Image (cartoon, rainbow, N blue to C red; front, side, top):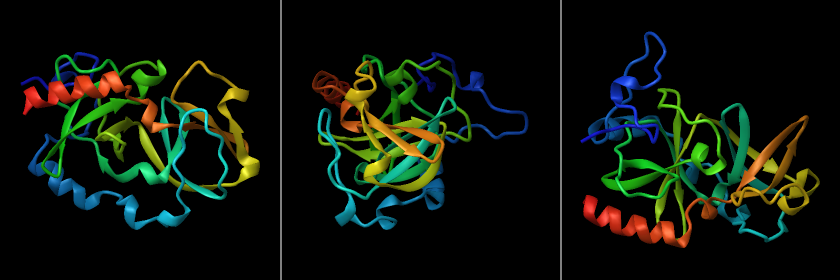
Length: 211
């Protein structure tokens, strides 16, 4: 069984720095590493969380965001989607999966599809790194893991920091808006837009065959 990112390289082709250990394989290694994970559900007040959907304005402030990085750009998403953050493990390819899905991983005995934000946003592809993280999301139809370069932490968002996406760009369906954090801009993401209804249907079929 081949394990790799969507780049098509095998395990030996992963972009690891000198001295780094290989990406752990799914299963027991993942369960061991989960003791190091950041369990978001224990870190936030669900009463203050608000889910955002495409074309819906942000109306409830303050809100709480998880901030993460991909390709030197900082992104954020609503904390209510987030179950936990876990260290990167080896990704097993899933033939026939949607184009934004890099493969699957085993999380607590469940097979979870991995969505690559690089593929969603048209960013340069690369192999896995030990420092990468998986943000485990609970979407309406399934659990999914978002592959990111790093997770930076939690942040409050106030009304004065928010600019809706239609005022900036409509070219990327996952972009809900922009959050201004001092001199820095955070690209606010709508996780429900990563996978279309057709993508979910395809995943249902592929995961059934995979299991």
